[in-house]
Length: 280
Image (tube, rainbow, N blue to C red):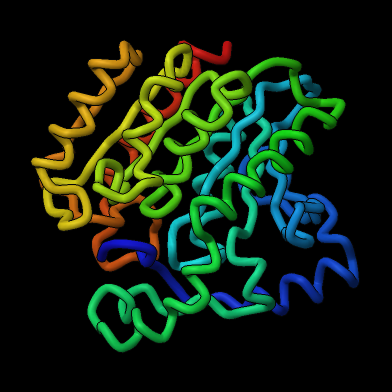
């Protein structure tokens, strides 16, 4: 898949919002001692539902902002955030499609295979423009900074598909507040668009980047990877750009038809190595 739509499964977000109002989703457990709590973050454009994943034990912890993919908020994203939290980071996972109102994320397999399904979903997905999400990011960063169990200082970001583009854009928009940014199976990182993330490369000095593309991804072909590499190198950005052999766009979330357990594990190791070098 390409552009704003990137893919995943069935999830009734309306029921989660209703459940949050009923019982505040108090510390639902997903792995180990890590807990997930539903929160609502005021933004310049409204109220954004989000999940906060806390490690076991006492903080303060370094913070991580996780940008979802284009399929929307659903349970398949939670284990990714949980694994990061279990490594000792407080993770915020916001629903970037909140402007569209309550919704049900479409089936990932349909989005990957059916152009009509992608077209039907585009109205929701396009509410998360780069400009909108960067306005939101300022609010997310302020929210994290206000948490008593977040360690003061710069944070890490990560993103998947669409979210990978936002993770990189955030690195160039808030370089004074982000120490490390990662992107996995991202798309459209170096285009002719005026908001292409690679144009922000000169502002990314001081942010450590890790980017991993799929070998099969029309939204991030080899010529785009070269263009991105050249921009980051010319700007003197500390970065690593890799292509994962055998992977296809969308390999990390478990509900996609191209999910790879091996590629997902490689992604976790690279991501946690990045954070250990920049946030610890």
